Length: 306
Image (cartoon, rainbow, N blue to C red; front, side, top):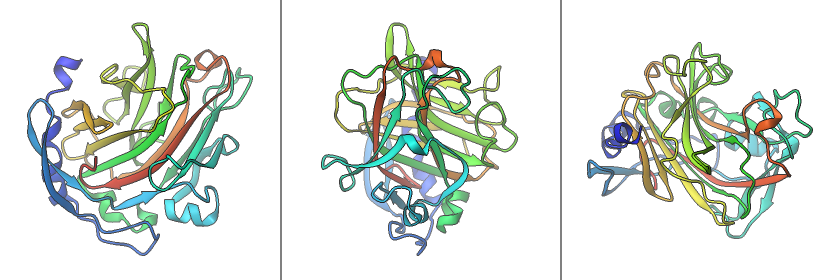
């Protein structure tokens, strides 16, 4: 897969900025008009120039769960679960101002659909660009999501698990085997070839969701998530026009695939799909003991942020 997927990444963003130029919105104090910074850098095997983009929206976790926080995030109730395992914490080292979201994963936990799990764990919510007044981003050709995450040292990775990404279209049709008018590009960590912390893009689209309809593993092992008690950034750019997906870990391009997200050109961006849990849908995916992870400093742009 690496030989066929990781050769294109840097050409994605220049045309994207011209295709999507959202305007400022008063819906939340953290929204500002995006613009290209003007700096360019050689990225990827193609050594092409990547235009950098200013964040059109940023989201932190101080006040998590309050009405004001939901307003700033454009959080919607549909598809939300696991609130008791998500809590705001202060961390002076957290990027974006020292607030973070702590997620607890109980021993043996999996998704909220698990019927044999001894404990709950993880959680999920969606944001909506249109409710934030960012319909230009929703209708644009490209969208870039960047955030920071931290895994404590000694983490039990279990078999595999989900991490936040982007989604588009109708909530409930972007994952889980039901793909009428939705798509998503969450990450996963997954054990493979004796390595427990491989990164990948777990892709759902109307035309590319694997033989079972439960997602495609893209770029498995092209990078590894670090469990070292330090903050790391992960960033993805999705181009609806071409189906291209590019990922950077700590600012280094680690995955690029042309046309892999097929069938999404007519489906608008929805926003952030905050989704994290072990699995899978049964207890065999879960950790042997309670685990935690931390998330901070989410941002969206029409161009690459780094």
